[in-house]
Length: 162
Image (cartoon, rainbow, N blue to C red):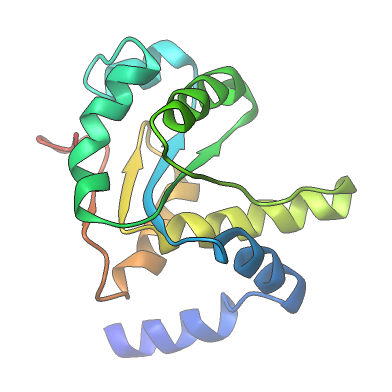
């Protein structure tokens, strides 16, 4: 059953050429060590990240994942998380951690970027959610098929924090 599901998923979820180009452009400079999915309001995200109260403490909690995996940090966010995303990205840059980004452009470009971002998230060696999300779940299913995934955390499960 699992093999049939994988075959169907590969057929249905294969990225279109424009999406594949955006994925390749985002990951060309370096692989993704950590994919952090920020969703919801910052107070909820802080709680999900072990009550980390600032971007530096978030990065401190993710330090083992960066030590174990080469590459950059990918921050997948919703609109409510833009400020928190920017603060974490700035702190990561101060530490010399590359930020992986997918280029956006116009309405159609934004939709393509959203799909590409999900594929980029699924390419990370460690995937970390901050809230229950179907977006994160799709990325996690894609990642589960790869042998090189180091770790993934699942919201709501004991010990789900890095």
